[in-house]
Image 1 (cartoon, helix red, strand yellow):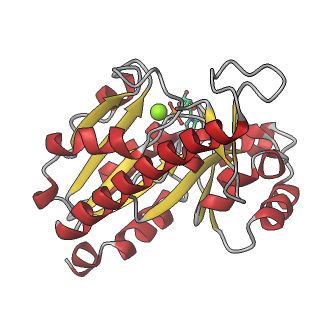
Image 2 (cartoon, protein in one colour):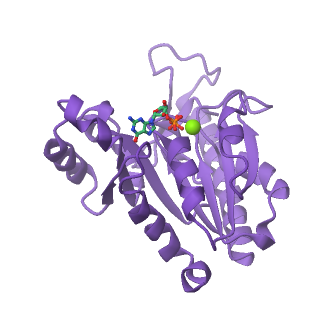
Length: 251
Ligand SMILES: Nc1nc2c(ncn2[C@@H]2O[C@H](COP(=O)(O)OP(=O)(O)O)[C@@H](O)[C@H]2O)c(=O)[nH]1
Ligand SMILES: [Mg+2]
């Protein structure tokens, strides 16, 4: 199902595009029915996930980015700082356990979802994949669930997995133009973590131009600047997380 994409207007298309369609669905009407079924199933399962998170008092945050922007590095820094908060990590990875292994030993319950296991090597997590991992997480004993999505600036934005909030990591090495090129992703998040600021002296990244592009597609999103490498600015992100977990904030 990763081939299909939903647009903001509710329509959808496949990766292949109209000219070379290998989907096997001959007519537009038949195709739209299939897409409606796929997204309908996803949204129903997302609602079930959301209900389970709420029932257990778990605040779920979907963390997205392109590959290599620094999600796992930031989550390592985050887990070290979240004392007093009972944290779980749902690690989405196409094939390996590399990231799940990197996050071990820091006090968080971790559940790995390989999207290639029976899911076809998907470029994103969807709600059924997240649901499949819930039995492996001690939801009753968690305050916060950090979901590391598969690295991709397109597909993850289009699948509700039942999260309460969405954040994305954006590395300054990715240039200023990506909000304009991938508006669905940038529009879908309430927080953009501008990462790798330790590299700014070596780059020609124009932060003001990036922020202008970001505002053009999402005027409401918050931004924080940080370096998951040096730890600079990470506390503000951790404060943002704590503020969303009332029990932990009070502790
Ligand atoms: N210089 C620098 N490198 C970083 C920073 N954050 C992550 N990296 C590096 O970027 C690469 C990809 O990071 P990773 O956390 O695996 O990204 P992910 O694919 O989004 O999970 C690794 O080599 C990290 O060490 C940062 O703030 N500054
Ligand atoms: Mg990672």
